[in-house]
Structure formats: structure tokens, C-alpha cells
Image 1 (tube, helix red, strand yellow):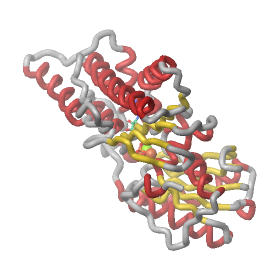
Image 2 (tube, helix red, strand yellow; image 1 turned 90 degrees about the vertical axis):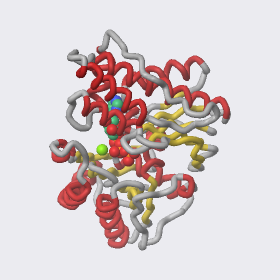
Image 3 (tube, helix red, strand yellow; image 1 turned 180 degrees about the vertical axis):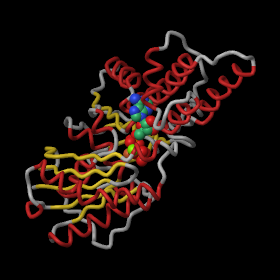
Image 4 (tube, protein in one colour; image 1 turned 180 degrees about the horizontal axis):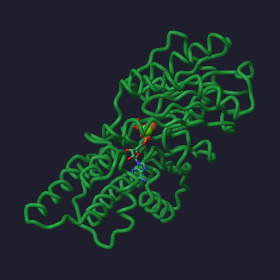
Amino acid sequence: YLLLAIETSCDETSVAVVRNGREVLSNIISSQIDTHRQFGGVVPEIASRKHVESMTLIIEEALREAQVELPDIDGIAVTQGPGLIGALLVGVVAAKSLAMALDVPLIGTHHIAGHIYANHLVGDILYPAIALVVSGGHTEIVLLESEGKFRMIGRTRDDAVGEAYDKVARALRFPYPGGPYVDRLAQEATEEVVLPRSWLEPDSYDFSFSGLKSAVLAEINRSRMKGETPEFSALARGFQQSVIDVVTGKAIKAAKEFGARQMLLCGGVAANKGLRTKLTELCAEVGLPLLIPPNKLCTDNAAMIAAAADMKWRRKQFSSLDLKAEAVMSLEEWSV
Ligand code: ATP
Ligand code: MG
Ligand code: FE
């Protein structure tokens, strides 16, 4: 069977055709980032308009690259939420139209379930598994008791990791989104300004990154007031090390506590080299198998949405045509 998936939760218009839930025939991603960069962040109204402009073209391109035609499609998956409501609506309307016209099932899909199940496109998932979700809008530790059963173990109380990276990057004068620049600078650094670790309460799997971000800004201001040039690379390194220590430390602790048989890393920040390396080392130390999708499947894409929707497809858990886009949406409630 062939699923056509649509993802428009933020600033990527993406359409994928996936065979039998795991074989990616096409995964077209059209990023709007060049448009949003000049504003230093994603402008919701512009994002919606751009999705409208590119949607039909991207659908056609996805079909062409997969070498299939619309009548071959057996089901439509779409990101229902969470995300920018206007952006989500464009994908949801397109998906409903296709499902109705082709008379095939529709599956409204949780965006973070997509990020997690991107891992199913690269390997078999062993349950129970712990997923470390690090993206532009989310930082979460999720327990997967079995396929498609999500339990939220911890989440950020303020900024998401990617958000903190982008804010620090802005202070270091990098263009938006600056996460990859901070990563590179941290890798190149020869020195490190040691910054605090926000472990929160000893038994908590929650995160907090706004204090760390403020610590970076305070260091920059302190240097400037003394008439010195701030050590950008040492600060980038200090920030990155603090983030990595805390997120990997908590993920490994959760894996032990819940008897995980596998660790899954996902979300846009999973592209971070320092994070990948550290988590790989820690998992090897405790003998825990680790899956990390390639970068193209870590950032927003529709193939991951098909991978998550497939769990519902196989269980015939379809959505009705009055499906609504949800800016805020519970992952646990989306469980199969
Ligand atoms: P969400 O999925 O939570 O709605 P999103 O989809 O906007 O958020 P992603 O596309 O998953 O987020 O990830 C984008 C984020 O990843 C940006 O904040 C970006 O700076 C960050 N990022 C990308 N590469 C790296 C890297 N190498 N190091 C650190 N951060 C990175
Ligand atoms: Mg994006
Ligand atoms: Fe995302």
C-alpha cells in the first residue's frame, strides 16, 4: 500500500510517498527559511501563504519522484498538530480534499510522533524504548511502552533546546536559525566558559534552558562592560556542553529507570554533532542500542509523518473528514 503524507506544521512544505509504512519513495521538502531569515524567525502569516503557493507543486513533485499517480495512493496522512495553526490548516485542507477525491482513508498525525517514528524508517524499534525529542519547539523524554503507546516522562518548562540554540546564536550574531552555527563554533573551540547545568529536582525529567541562555547573554555583557571582546567560541562550547550533559544525562537515567531496550534520538537538534557523539558514547557504555535518523529525516519532513501514520493505518484507526488542525495537541492521547 502507498501512503501520501503532508507536513506543514511550521516553515517546511513537505510531501512524501511511502510504501508499506517504511519504504520512502519520495520525500520532497520545500523550506521557506530564506524568506523568514530576514525577520529573524518564522512569521506565521507568511508561512501559511507560502504553503498555499507551493502545496500543489510539491504534491506533484512527490508523485513524480515516486513514479506513481494519484489513483495509486491508498491513504492520506497529514500533520494535524501541534504547530502554527494557519500553516497546519493548509496541509489539513489539502489532505482532506485528496482523501475525499480519491475516496481513501485520512489519518491525522501528531507531529512529534512523526519525529519519533522517523527512527522506524532507519531501523527496527525495540520496546520499551526511550525517545529523546530535541527540536525547535519541543524538548521531551517520551517512553514508548509498545508500538504507538506514548508516555510523557519529562518536558521543558521554558525554552525548547532548538529555541535556546537560536537565541544564543542571535547573541553571537549568527543568522536564523543559528543552531548549526553554534554547533560548528562549539566543535572548533579550544576553550570553554563553563556554564551552569540545570538539573532541576533530582527525580525530575523536566528541562529548563532559559537560565542557561541568560547566562550566555550575561557573559557577553560582562565582557563588553569591561571593554573586552567576548570569547564567542568558548561561550558556544560552554553552552553546548551544558545542554548536552543535561539532555543525555536525563535520557540515559530514564532508559535505566524504565528498562528501555533502545534509545531513539529525534528532532532537528538531533543533527547536532556534539549531541550525537555524546549520546552514542553513553549508550555504548551501558550497552543500549541507539537509533538516530539521518539529518534529512531529523528536521521537518513528510516521510516521518507517513511512518507514524502507518501505525494507525495498520490498525484501521482512521480520521473522519471533519478532522481539525490543532495548534496544541497531546501526544499521549494520540497513542494507538
Ligand atoms: P517542532 O518539531 O518542535 O515543532 P521544528 O520542527 O521547528 O520544531 P525542527 O525542524 O525539528 O524544529 O528543528 C529546527 C531546530 O533545530 C532549530 O532551532 C535549529 O536551530 C536546530 N538545529 C538544527 N541543526 C542544529 C545543530 N546542528 N545544532 C543545534 N541545533 C540545531
Ligand atoms: Mg523548520
Ligand atoms: Fe518539527
